[in-house]
Amino acid sequence: MIDVAYVQRMTRYNRWQNENLYGVADRLSDDERRREHGVFFGSIHKTLSHLLWGDRVWMSRFANWPKPDGGIPASVSLFSDWDNLKHERTTTDGALVDWSDKLDASWVAGDMTWFSGAINREVTKPTWQLVTHFFNHQTHHRGQVHAMLTQAGGKPHDTDLFVMPE
Image 1 (cartoon, rainbow, N blue to C red):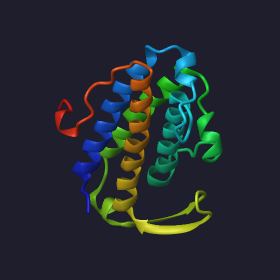
Image 2: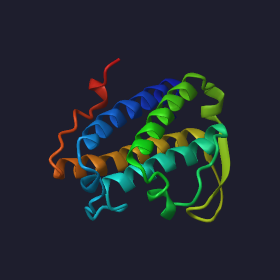
Image 3: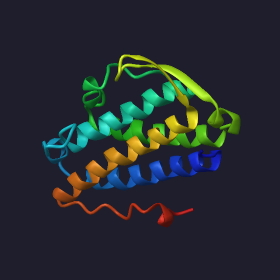
Image 4: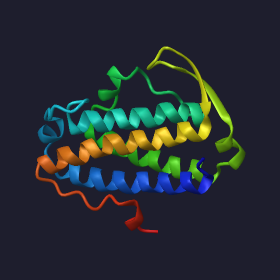
């Protein structure tokens, strides 16, 4: 099982890596960010939009944040403007760090029940497992974005957790 320190470390890692990838993506043209690469969500922009949507969906469950509009198919177009997407990502990452700093160990050790639109039924799972999935989802899609940025000539910085600045 994970603990609060793990959640705090991972929210900071998430913020660090988003700064890394968005910084590289910001140097690309809008056309390049929207170019289809054949990955699940198609482009850098769409994948980053989905990832922000996904973070907010999970936080609506974890901390009663407002649930974003639409489902998975609409997640790729929820943040259609690049500057708005960047702003919302930065705001969300700060809020994630703040949330993790206030976590209680008993919440992480408990269970959570919610209705999953992805599988269309109610689910109950250990909260620590869901939080682990939350971070795994982020890492999975950031890996796709990293590959697309590299294909586009971008050079993201290191992604290793152990080299993250304190």
